[in-house]
Image (cartoon, rainbow, N blue to C red; front, side):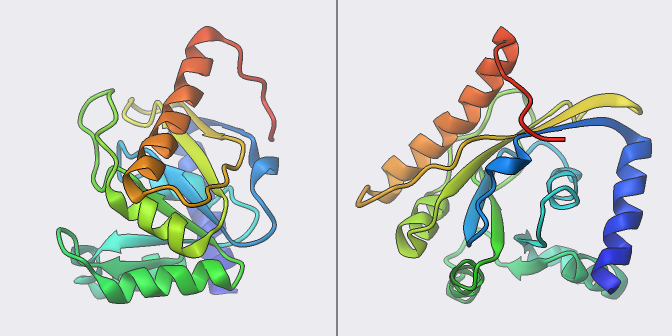
Length: 196
């Protein structure tokens, strides 16, 4: 109940802040899966999370949980803390458990926000999670979020990708390329809207 109320409030706020277009929601599997996203702003996880058909879970840097009010709100939205720049085994195990239970788990594959239009090199974490969970990966592109008020933002979900036996680095590179390809399609004007 609390989650639904917060989700509605956040969705209204985002709709006032941006002009949002969402594509490909129907491509999200009904079972456990990983949403692999690019990262440009603090709005990214909210823009994706309020539109997913089920509650989305995501790692967030542990510093965000220092404030009790902020911590409570983001936990309700599905966030849980992770220690950056270290192998946080506890958070990784929790992520795998969420996926195994059939949830939507999301991750910023760059590990931090990119300050330019170019994506940063993907971290091995996405490769590890994919290999261990054996779950499909849905590439997600977020564009336009660094613009001013009422700027047009696009959240585009791509077709799920299955992996079998690839190395962590190879998985990470393929997922990054899948996200980039969504942007290329947008520039060429060939992407068809597949969601609301």
